[in-house]
Length: 204
Image 1 (spheres, one colour):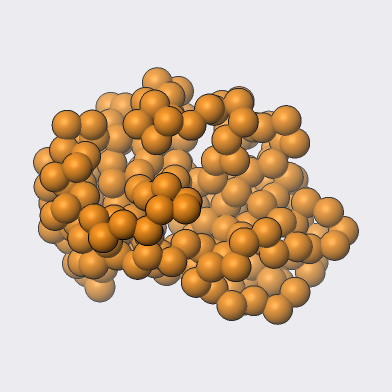
Image 2 (spheres, rainbow, N blue to C red; image 1 turned 180 degrees about the vertical axis):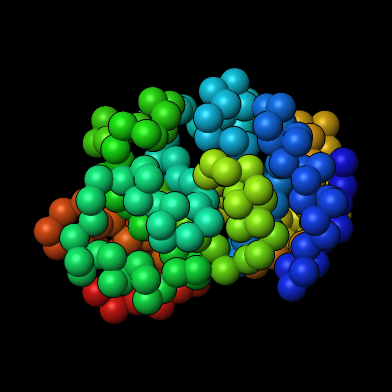
């Protein structure tokens, strides 16, 4: 399924259709405020494993992240945040950032690496946030492209569809994507650290 949606006002009927696909274990490629993402409902283990196969990643070692609707949604999956981290996130989200946080027991086992951390995103993109809101669970987030590979197909939804049509259930055309990834901030220690500088600028 190839679905055109407009970020300013995503079509509710189409959002419901895509959420039904996610609830049934489907894999969806969706726009964010950075690179197009590929993901599924985080509570569907088979779907998560399928995404890992498509991306050729090892779930035990992978630093997986997921997309939440807003800050209050994030607190369902993390240990209590200190004031500084909370203020930093409040100031920068929604936006092109991934915050690495200590995971709590609500995070499915598949997501917890040895460090018991989770990457959290709240992209500045209404399409993916409306999907998360309607689904009621976060959506797995991993980039369509390889981290060290900047290829044209990853910004054009029609080319993404050509490449992934046989592997996923839905490709959403939300306009041209970006080729710059999110900025990653590790908030698991006393000293916050920028692990990767991407699209978002940040002062810790």
